[in-house]
Length: 539
Ligand SMILES: Cc1cc2nc3c(=O)[nH]c(=O)nc-3n(C[C@H](O)[C@H](O)[C@H](O)COP(=O)(O)OP(=O)(O)OC[C@H]3O[C@@H](n4cnc5c(N)ncnc54)[C@H](O)[C@@H]3O)c2cc1C
Image (cartoon, rainbow, N blue to C red; front, side, top):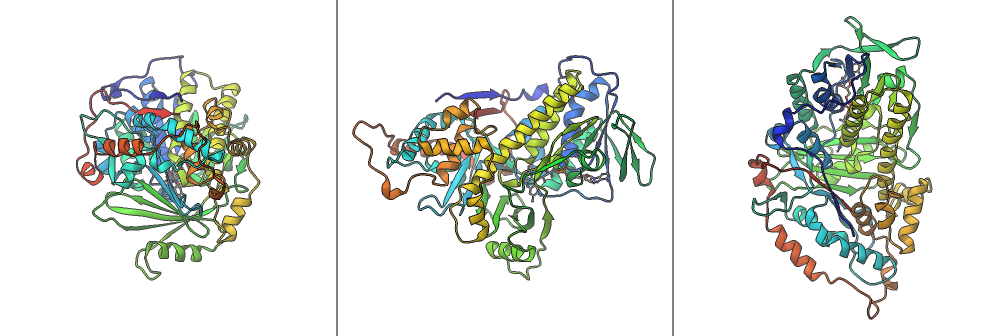
């Protein structure tokens, strides 16, 4: 099993470093207008500001005083660390400001009914997992072929051990094994923090409600008409207006591809609850009757919510079920927020002189907390294209193909959670399991798994399962118990190699003792050590 680690970021001192000057920016690019001041607007503004303000480009965020932000979205992938690192912003600064906690991964509870597989943990990977990945993949492949070996992911990854013990993915100073980790945070506070940073870094701000985009003869956007003030001119416009898609959809009429035929959830409810003295270092996603509930620990409270399908249950039923699940009665004075979700993506994220970032470009339900990653990657890739000085049609097509492939890959991984469920208690779960509207690559991956030949080579070559690494695909398939019926399993044949688990248990237990208590670490977040960098592990 080969392992590759990508060095993602730079030393803290480099935050002030100016990006290397590449091709000259097009003369026509002097003013970029970002419409929207949610997480997408401010993250994009900061990414643009870092590279473009030093090169004389003006970056302005326009935000409506009349339309609020969505105000949910409390979990991240590990890439968010790369975002802050690239801006030279320390965890010790942003995490307390956003009531943030560390995230080792996600427990999926109740998605499978197969004995022994009622719950599993989708870990973030680490250097230490080099020592156990080979055994995990070997055992999974053997079990699919009918050999009676242990192949549940939880016993093979250090992150699941840390999460189970409420430890932070932060080792003692003398233990050199870095862990790839994400975060939980208060999304409203995150928006405020990002806004403050962006303004400090030279981003301009205009509070104005945009009534419409004015198009020129070429069909590109020339200016924005506002409700009470003057028109706002720009050379390039970034649509961060959330589900409204004011520029990309309403003005430019960019077609939208719905994912509703294989992702049924279209609504959510959010509800806070009090935090105790133990602060977990994981998200818990529990399957309920018509969707799933999230439980996200922040330093000051839990964020909870229910993502469900209105085809199968009403908002009132969903709220009742969520409150029951949380042990909060219907008459509790904690009010719930009800939200609608539009699942899918636009066909062109970059259309004429407009780029859509955030919910305006599309959304895949939050089961793997990938939305901020889409924002980060879309904005970063756009800056790379600008730096190349190429804004032509071929560049736009290449950009759109890249972002669309990211959406499709992530969609397939999320669909797998539903397709592999074995619940039969409601029509919702039966319909998900019976759903045949799968992409060709996903069909091939599922049938390759069932063949027992192993899916690792196809994922490594990026032929199948794009967007998620080998350990994620093995974790989901094994974690859901997609193996032959236990009664049909045979003992390993003489000479057939199997990995005993005792050595792995021992290794993970000893290793876990080098990681620190989560609540304690949050009380005093250490500054990054000189030379620390984000290692991204892919198998
Ligand atoms: C239930 C749910 C759970 C989620 N969980 C996660 C998660 O765990 N992890 C994750 O990464 N993401 C999650 N997300 C997604 C995440 O919330 C969003 O991707 C993120 O907040 C970015 O939103 P946004 O900035 O695109 O839109 P919004 O927050 O909706 O911001 C839109 C902005 O546009 C402005 N605007 C709108 N109309 C106008 C106008 N006419 N003129 C001027 N300004 C205008 C508004 O004032 C606002 O500032 C979740 C989403 C939902 C629905």
